Image (cartoon, rainbow, N blue to C red):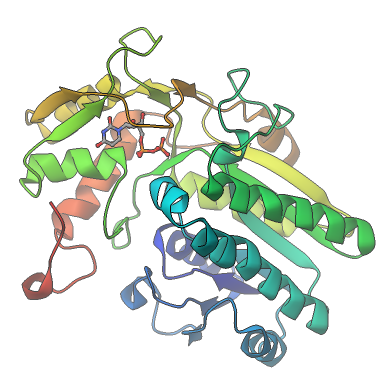
Amino acid sequence: MNILVTGGAGYIGSHAVRKLLEAGHLVVVLDNLSYGHRDAVPNEIPFYKVDLKETDRIEEILRKHNIEAVMHFAALISVGESVQKPLLYYRNNTAGAMSLLEAMERVGVKRFVFSSTAATYGEPEETPIFETTKQLPINPYGRSKWFVEQILRDIAVSDSEFGFVAFRYFNVAGADGSIGEDHQPETHLIPLVLFAVMGKRDKITVFGTDYPTPDGTCIRDYVHVNDLVTAHVLGIEALSNGDARFYNLGIGRGYSVREILDAAKNVTGQEIPTVLGSRREGDPARLFANSDKVQKELGWQPQHTNIEEVIASAWHWHTTHPNGYQEPETSSLPK
Ligand code: UDP
């Protein structure tokens, strides 16, 4: 299939590009490089530095490469920033997706894979979280993605040839050798823990030790990025007319912050400089998926269910790329 990957220079998008190429698909990447890294995309595949709002240019690209399906990763991802700048999030994530979908409509591209998020569930009323669990996002980031889910449902109703799959991600982690996570600034637990070991940060702060969980810290479901993108390949290959599919992507097991720290200590063989801090606003105590649906319907089977293995792959990436994709002399990683 000829597939356009938006956000293909980002963390998850770059892993998806690699997986799609391995599966024999023709891949074209679109990314505005606001957060993505050109070096994360292989030189031999067509790359366009284009923003999602450029509907006409996207239309041209879709036509030029006879694109049959779109995998849409390009989005802003910071919950805290979304609270400060809601319009930025609705503009990029919601209006951006609409612009892309309009270009697809003009050309007649009928297959769409969407990066959604467990943040669409908000504070879930049950764990594990099923696809049928009530969605009540509690911040603009979650709502910006939730709106796109609703738009996709409406398009599928209006056009019987359209088919989409929306994956609701839990906590994505790990790396695949020469590509990995390089967010500026970084806010995610696993890379920050590893930065503390590497001396790129003084310490890691545990956000809250008084949650109603066995060890008092928050529990999350960490899915390896390669398992996550494998589901996308299965999804895009399975899509047919009229499909409106929603799947949780998590391994169905949660790890607490303390368990992550213990696992990182085992992987790195080093003590993690840690301080116990107060809760971070908006953090639910426990989030983990029931992923039976994607396993049953797409035959997805996560391969990296051992958290130490996930952390080891991230550790390998960070130690071999201590400045991410930047040249060492220009690195300015925030503390
Ligand atoms: N966390 C923490 N210290 C940090 C960063 C994160 O204790 O410096 C906790 C956070 O409160 C959450 C878990 O680690 O319970 C995972 O956070 P992350 O930001 O990686 O992902 P999120 O669950 O917010 O999507």
